[in-house]
Image 1 (cartoon, rainbow, N blue to C red):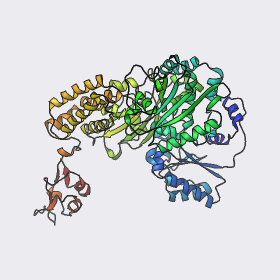
Image 2 (cartoon, rainbow, N blue to C red):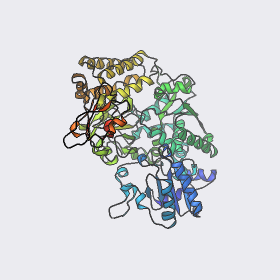
Image 3 (cartoon, rainbow, N blue to C red):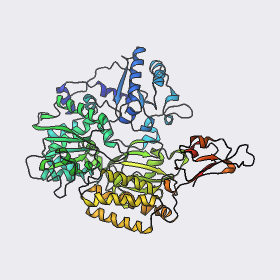
Length: 637
């Protein structure tokens, strides 16, 4: 976004009548001059907040005031910029300079040198934006951003999420006006159908069909709900959208309510997302004040309002029927399907339920048209997908890429590759419900069908990257441990099956497994997939089955050789001091927490002090000794 566009967004201040005309494309844009010559955007998402962005904002505002620049420079707390590993992030417009890992001390320099004197602090910039010759390139030209296409994330890191006027300045609520003013519910549903948008919560069910089923279901009372529970380990897509662009979800849910004939909506969001909850509360209140929620919206006769319901962090409540049960005030347990929520959902009434990312696409589809959206992506997977990129990757953060982008492009270009010179080994998609994609399939395009063919799934969008130091047995064990804890226990296949699978994996990780255990895992997994009540139990075996299929040699090494190739499983490890390499410094012994290392009588050739050795009967295999050995005289076997 250019400085002129950003300035226009911040100029457009108007009362309710003018806002309505703006949204209706009937009013001339306000041309009042702004007093600000520069704008400083500071990431206020959870990631940057946890790394100290509040202190950055305080330091910035204090220093601007001290320098007499507080009337010339506007400070804006935005949502997530995407490059979470570089937080706190500060961007200065009109230059668009990107300051990474900002500190209060650095802020003093930025204010004095850049904002006051006009001299960019190049040594504080994100290194990818500075060429060897000292020239500065725009953020959109960096490897992290140039292959992204932001639709769901279009306003994150751009606007103040707690200012409805900034959302309206980006043509927010135009789609809602268009729907209420000139479209029938059938036309709205058809537009969503024709776009090819599929649910971004995991299963990839066509969004338009879900809307159509709910609209066509008999009954005068219907509901619209938003799944913002997002419980996958390492996933933070929905949270970031709510933090950075909450009005996009409000607008989309209101459009959906008109399409299906509902007048009440609910956003189910976990209480562990305090920033997202606060900004959603602010946005809801602003929308009501501007007449964009409540009675007779835009004077078009449609009534709709939204309430927030806080979840207590149960992973199973990401399943649609368990979520609806929790909204009703009951223990979050899944129900048998059919009937599906579109027919009998919340309080026994037809209910439309989509997740945050799905809704984040709706207003753009309505405003720009189904043909625009369906022109992106692949034949069966249209549009873009947001991923939370984590694990063994340089650029940890939030990315949005067109469907069909290859895994290689995400990891090596957008993600910046594997740090510390390690080799890429696998990527886990779909969280506890997904599977691992090995390095040999790195050129696989990311779409629903391609991932399913490899035994994985799109899921909500977590993408965990692993390198050569990850043990695939241990990875499977981690995900099974998670699902054991998160199973609601209502059905026996999940309650007992997940625990039994975990026990078998634990046995293998300790070198006590047998080849028959692999057959038992396969049999048990298939029973769970066919007989569990909900998707949690049905998909829980996926990480195990995919790693056995793609990394069977690692399982066999644990079973047949009593060896963990990655050196992760503690019971199969041993540490040994190569005495001829030991200089007798004693750092290993000093740092050993259990006193398992002692001095010997042996002095290696060319050395002056006696070498040390490890008593394996006392060793707890923590690895502290190896980490403290400067000469790499300690090896892990």
